[in-house]
Amino acid sequence: MNKQYYFVYGTLKKGYCNHKLLRDSKKIRDYITRPEYSMVNLQSFPGVVKNGNTAIHGEIYEVVDEMIEKSLDKLEGYYKPNNKENLFNKEYFDIEGEKVFIYILNTSKVAIEKYQIIPTGKW
Image 1 (cartoon, rainbow, N blue to C red):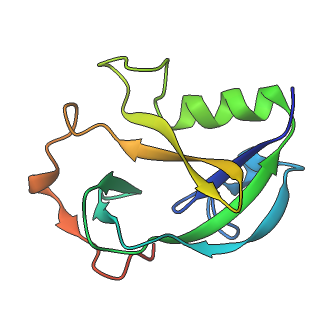
Image 2: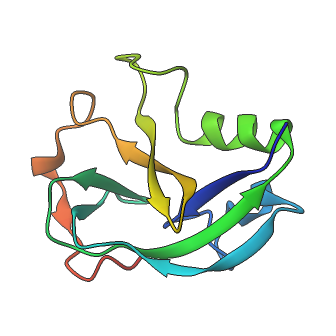
């Protein structure tokens, strides 16, 4: 597997319960997205949706192990592209010419209007 970059913004961040899934992945840096998203509080973890006006605060990791990538996909309920059963869809944005993956909440699966918006974009 080639290296992949992942932007994490919730329980995968350093100091949170699921960070262990990133194991030996290298933290590249803290990062704040453009204000193009909204973050919702799904009780024990956050979700991010597009077409908002909030900048999301998170961390970027370099993942070079396919098993780690599969563990991340499993945690996020991501099965395959455009699967209506995905809890999150895996999309990417560009940072300085690098493709960085982000998990975006599948709004056809989760009724986000039932949840509180996190206006700071920080979990």
